Length: 402
Image (cartoon, rainbow, N blue to C red; front, side, top):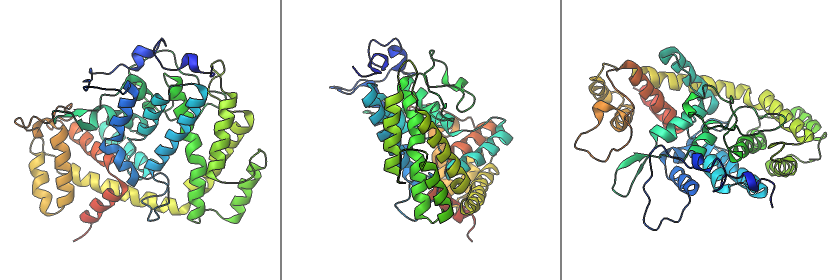
């Protein structure tokens, strides 16, 4: 028997019923052969937010080099790493697949920089906060839509275990171990990232797989883009000199992290690495932050991203006039047709006043009441957060071209 088989989220586990709970009962298709978690995986795979990840930043903004990692490649790495770990330990691989493929759906354009820019807007205008894990939960619960067999657009309506794993996937990994919490909670009561561990062991696996997946890959991209110099690489080789790893590449780092984690994890002690690999993870993170994530070339692009997001936000916010806002937006289409059309489509999907009563295809939750300015601001934030780097740049260029 594999080490974690008895605690895997499967029938018979005390957490099973809560884990497969959906906020609304889901329709069963004729001849359905998929499990609840496989259905969740497929629903995420087919949604628009997943497709957009291919043009969203991982570290380097809107890269012209097609081999540079974007958010969708990172998500696929996390899915692969968490599958390998969960299969080896005896956990539910269908659950880890679904959490992993959906864990970053709420990322803003321009990665964590875009996230910080939107956070400033939300704090100032709505007196709330913005963080990508919470926004990923909002995306899968309220934003993303799929057409059912009757051509009606509905929310994704995913299981509790997948929703929980997505909203709790981030935060710094505990240096000693990750152990799931015992109780299910209302997930919107989680008010800051990394404050609670996931509800399931599978969620814990995705949480650490996220870290394993990006550390070495970011170094590979930095090398390709000439971010790192010989002296810095010498410092990295000194870090490796304290471990059994002798050569720098992403596959070697991931392999050794995965093998070490599977060897040292247990239901009694949690999902954990050995002291050697805790040291390595912390040192690689320190190295990346020092030499890659704060590099001057990236800092220059942060300023560009801030200009783009703030310009789009300010343009749309100035068009607010209660229920007359859509008319204002439409009138501005002679100045910025792409932005006006895109935001009007957004409002049609989610705003009360824009929902056509005779159009029965919309079955999703209404999010915005345009009589309330805060709802209109939230609509702009949701819209901007959904944009890819490429589209955000296109809209900015439209706003700055005469």
